[in-house]
Image (cartoon, rainbow, N blue to C red; front, side):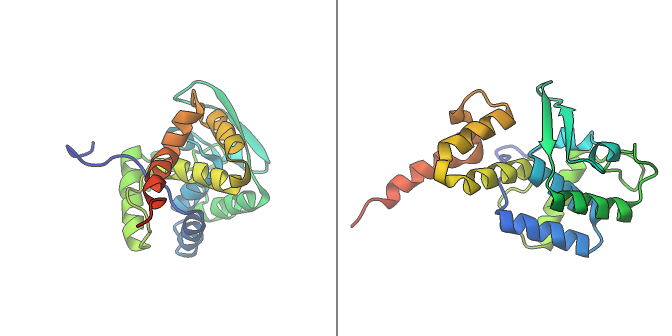
Length: 195
């Protein structure tokens, strides 16, 4: 639970910083967190859906389908070859008890709690000197959204419609607010003024 009057909205990582973090975590032997960050950034899934994933859903497949816990809707995720390779590397280093095991199991043998992952992410922010304000589980989903939007900036409206569908938002306006675009657009108004 957050402190009274504290900011709880998650910020996003710049894509290059997120990819560097994935590589550094793997290099440092922290394959579980490298796996978490990569799946979060490449899928845009909520943390509750990531924690429910099992190795059998992800290995040796190009796509997988889940039923989202929050919305109850089915969603299919396609994984690119780089992510598939990273998943295999993480699997071999983590060495779970079986392919049917959850992907994120703590040293105690239980699935990580959302609160524990948020604590770990804050520790990673400090350790790796990440340029992000509030780094939490939801930051990974927002990082995915911002990257999809940025990569399709030549057709921003289409990118927003795609993200609206992927995120199951009821309108593009909500998606823009979610990604922080509305606030950026408003602040750019001040930059067009000259002295």
